[in-house]
Amino acid sequence: MKENQTNKLAFILICFVFLMFIEATIFGNGSIVLVLLGIGMIYFSLRKRTRFLFWTGFILILISIFSMWSLRLLLMAIMAYILYKLWKNEPIQQVIRPFDTVYKETPNSVIQNKLFSSQTTPFNAYEWQDVHVQGFYGEHVIDVTQTVLPKGTSFISIRQSLGKVTIYVPYEVPVRLHYATIIGEANIFGRGLQRLWNQSVVLKDGYQEDVSYASELVVTVSTWIGDIEVIRK
Figure 1 (cartoon, rainbow, N blue to C red):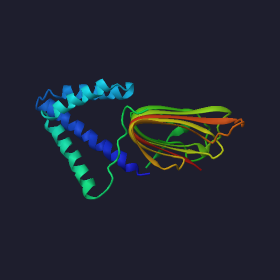
Figure 2: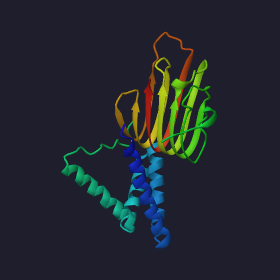
Figure 3: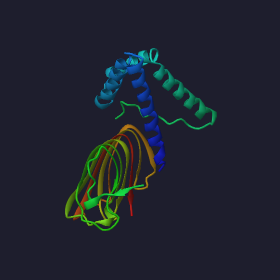
Figure 4: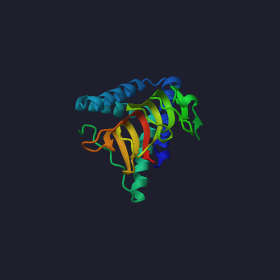
C-alpha cells in the first residue's frame, strides 16, 4: 500500500487550514466564517445526501475564494496538480459522486486512548482484550495472530481523525469489517488498493454457509483522513 499518499494529503490540507487561520487572525479576514459554514454544509450534505446543502456550501466556499488569498493559493495548487497529471499523461483520480448509493509496544496488550499515538499490540503472545480506541491521530498495528480469540465475537473499534490502521488476522478466523472515511485508502485481504472519497466498505471474509464458528472478529474503523490494511497470515 502507498501509505504515504494519504498522510501527504492530510499534511497539505492541514497546512492550508493553518494558512487560513493565520489570515483570519492576523489579517482579520472574516471570510473564514463562510468557509467553515460551507465546509459544514458540504459535510452534512454528504452524510444526509441532500443536494441543496451541498451546492449552498459550494457557493459559500466559492465566494470565499475571491476574498481569501490562502484559498486562491489552494485553487492554484489544485490546478497545477491537474495540469501536471495531464502533462504526464496520468489518469486523474476519479472522485466518487457524493450522492451515489516505527511502533512502540503498548503494555498489557491494550491499545490505549491517546490524542496522538503510534501503538501496536505486543510482539509476543498475549491475552486478547477487545480494542476500543478514540483519538485525533494514530498509527495502530493490531496483530491478532499473536493471541487466541475467546469463544464468541471479539471486537476492534477505532475512531480517529487521521492515521493508518493495520490489522493482521489468522486465516481460520472469520471477519466482518466496516470501514468509513472521508479520504483514505483501503487494502483488505489482498483485494487491491482502493481509494475512497466519503465512502464506506462493508464486507465479510472467511464465512461459509452451514458452518458454525467458535470465534469471529468484528472490525469497525472510522476516520476523516486515513488508511486501513487488513492482512491474513
